[in-house]
Amino acid sequence: MPSASASERTLLVGVELTSRPRNQSAAPEALPVNAEESLSELVVLTESAGGIVAGQMLQQRPHLDAATLVGSGKVTEIRNRIQSDNLDTVIFDHELSPTQLRNLESTLDAKVIDRTQLILDIFASRARTKEGQLQVELAQLNYLLPRLTGRGKTMSRLGGGIGTRGPGETQLETDRRRIGARISKLKKDLGRIRATRGIQRSQRQAVPLSTVSLVGYTNAGKSTLFNHLTGAGVLADAKMFATLDPTVRQVKLPSGRRVLFSDTVGFIRNLPTTLVEAFRATLEEVTAAALLLHVVDITSPSAAEQTAHVLKVLEEISAGKITQILALNKADLLPEPDRKLDREMLTHRILGETARQNATDTVLISGSTGLGVGALLETIDKCLTLDPVSRHRFLLPASEGKALHLLHERAAVISQEFHDEVCEVVADTPQSILRRLAQFRVP
Image (cartoon, rainbow, N blue to C red; front, side):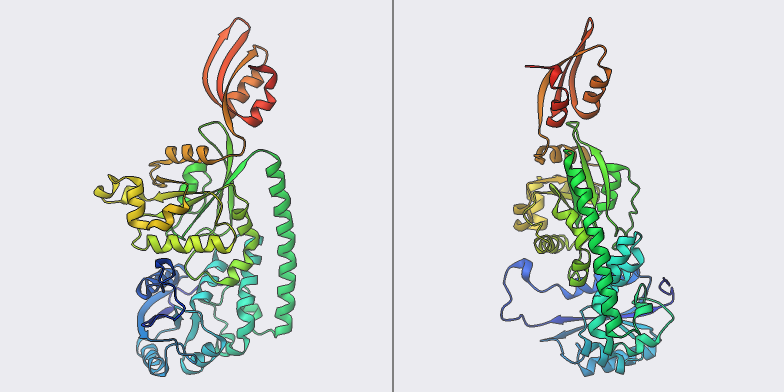
């Protein structure tokens, strides 16, 4: 796949609606996205894709223009800006309809892409496993199919760059029938992967190991925390969607129980529906988890809005009712007065009531320094119901070194004393280990 050109100069265009739709709820989490914040996020997305942001334009309108999104007057202004600043690409902070895309491309002498295609492009550059590449390709083709008639100029550009990575380069000039056939094949291939994942999940569930999935807004610090908990060495980068393919590692909790931690792709506002559908096999890892660790960048000025978007996506993938722990990350960067606040007060002040109601517990942490990680593991231990832990006393013959090792490895040993040829051990023991050592347990 060709990478984005380092010299690809882009103009970002956003629209702020000045009127609220009649059916718009007054709930804070349902209000329109702040246009300036969304455009700022688009800057980070563009830079993550390798582009240079040479300019930004934010227009206020009562409603979106059906033909060009921004109206003919603004299109003329954009065209003049492209010519005067020698720009290559215009990225719109909204999903463009096929008609809008066709009209804009026929007027602007530059590549035109929208927010959805930009996110798909970043995913294409991040996918490393075969599964991830198949999922991205399926999402790109589903996005492309209804827009074939509006891609004339882009289809003639073979130089690569933002919005042209991945399968788009080889598929843009194919007809609908060939793309449809490719989509069918991809769905079958992903179906097989989904079945394999199901078998692997069943095998894991045969052993009493709970799965804890890390979820959260992109760039909230999930991978940094995951690395601190597991030592996995997953890429932790300030770029958005630095982690795409899920990673699963085993972790020992304070009680001695072992759990599986799963690092997943970060969510984002206006997550393309094509991505949600294509990544259904991966997202099933979230829906099958016993516990969700919702990681929030507590220092972000948009923390409340980002948290609301994550909760919305969890509802969409039927994971909204899974027990959640709210991990307020990057606590080491908080101002000193905020660090002294009670966790509940801090959560309510920064995230609002909705986030607090959805979480079973809240922990203040720092994935980079390790602050609060011990308390986080204890909280996870408390919230998991699979393979419950209880305190028991065992009398182990001196010859049963394997059983003693098992207690030290998989339980929390409280005390240990040797009496002649017998070792007396008191330990907080998971039920699965208790069953294996039942013959040595003292009632």
